[in-house]
Length: 261
Image 1 (tube, one colour):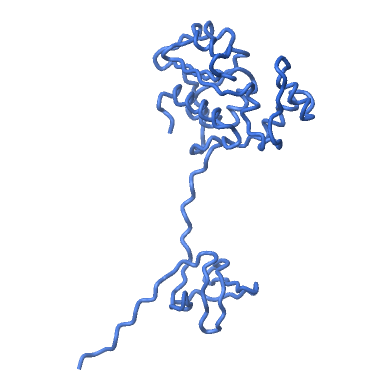
Image 2 (tube, one colour; image 1 turned 90 degrees about the horizontal axis):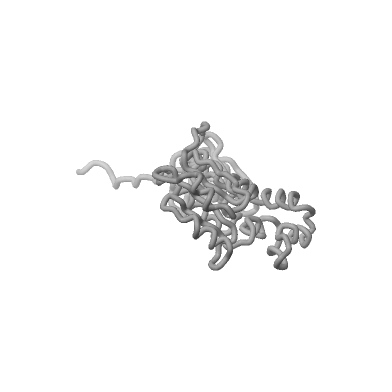
């Protein structure tokens, strides 16, 4: 006669992930996994009652079939992201500034770029400089002397077809200079209204200073106080309108000549 009976099926091991519903056949207690504590698992039934059971082999039923609950394997930690959405570099040390530069029109533009892309720019060693306006852009570009790996990126407000800004930019064309821009009257307007707690940016009559008009309409006081409110509402690139995000990303790619990680 042949020895032995039918082979016993191996009992599968199942990670005790939160919310997994299993039953303890010895007591009839059925509940969802809350957590694993050492060699035990805590279950909670639909009435909110909690019980602790040891993680023994084949000790539970899952969909009526015996299983062995095991401690879940921790998922590998995702790399931390910077405010721009790029991978944050830990232990970053100051890097010698590269020859290339990014120019923006004013202090507010520079502060906003720093808030979102500052980490990326420090990794690449690229300095952002405010111009105080672009009326003399062609002369400033000639003075900078772009060429080779000495590249220049320029971010311009209200860069739309037919605008004064578009005419100024056309006079500063150079193969090692990239000018990008956004359609908004001011960099403030490139921040999503919801991020600063308003439904929409007010319409300011032509001829009136835009920042002053906005602050008066919203009751924000002087423009300096208004800017602090705007900047504090920006935590990352998701708080900015897409045209500005795309414009800055293109500038960084251009001046870093493909060196970004």
